Length: 556
Image (tube, rainbow, N blue to C red; front, side, top):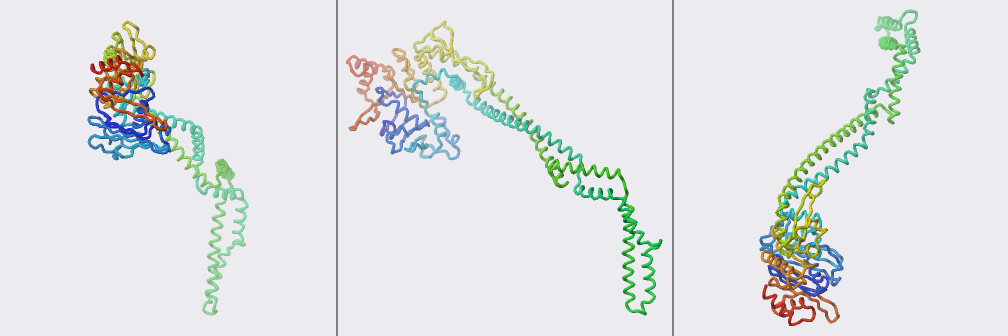
């Protein structure tokens, strides 16, 4: 519950420091006194949007601080903000919001700075603010479904469904991205497969082109080459003899005179070296000559092979066969990656199918829980509404199955209502008046407060559109809620203002410079009588109004 509220430099509030008790707290004041300002400051504290226009003095910070007793509240700070969670001493939680003149806004919990998301998350478990015209939420399908989920205690099922739903949406987006990429690459992949097939069929060998070009020259000049080689051999074998044999015989003759003529041995050795070299040359020429063959067929094969290689070099912008081989290997790698992309697409499609099935199962469980609770919710709300001067009212929660899945499942919902018995049930947005919507919303809030364990609820003129005995019964309902939780009721109706024991008055004062200031004070016995009398009769207080006020207060 909210134990204390401190406001500095907010709108018409210069400085305000007020304690709040538990139970029902009535807040009244003339129109324009600043009740909405008080509610705005509290909304800011609970994570609402900040605006530098709300600073009373735009040279100073605006500070709103609230002290909450969280005894019995289902709040685990570590679940919200992790290991660095603020510590709540003695079940006291102090929230603070600071707005600087620059517009920068900061949030604190127990003097520890926290992200705004953490402040908002905790606030949702501390206070429920029913602002003016919030009863119109009853006509909103999303709100209607949230009411049913609260009642059915389907929060965990809904969270589980939403988790799968988000995962499926992401998986579907990723599948679309992969499919689009693969489709865009399909034509290119086919061309690369064609290129690779040609290069593989070519059976490329590094250095092959140079060898082929040499062989081509030999084949093209085979006769000239043979003629030159064999002509050289004939010169080494004049007149049928052999130069090599002549060298051999010369060496033999010189060896006989080694001992007689100095230097002959060296000459003989030189002749022997020439003989060996000439013999080797003769053998090499024979080998070369025998290896030279004139083959038009082989020449055509070599020409064709060279033409193929040169075509590939030109086609793929390469200068050597080595570069062609590198390009071939690169194509292999790229096509291997393309195959992986196809496999990835299939894997992603399987994931989408799996998540689709899981989402359907989660939606079925959620729908089953909702349908099991819709009838009970209808009965409870109908009984509660009938106690607010609508004895023949009928209310029904109707569910149907939508054509597609949304973030809340596959259930469509309608709140059907008929104010008078025997009338056809019609969607509440089409048949209920403002006053009827206010009464239905109050019944709903009373019921939801029991199920959510909310420690504090604030009603900002929930009595809009009602009066007389209806207002009195709404006041009784609010009073009952105040016995189990802290309830703030901002009201213009005396029938509601006399409920509860705590009555606060919001009023406006003007200083010597005619500057307006909003203040709030606790009304004592006689002050409260006069305030209720003002609400009954207006600015001119009559004795009858005062007596009526005393009567209303004494009977509540």
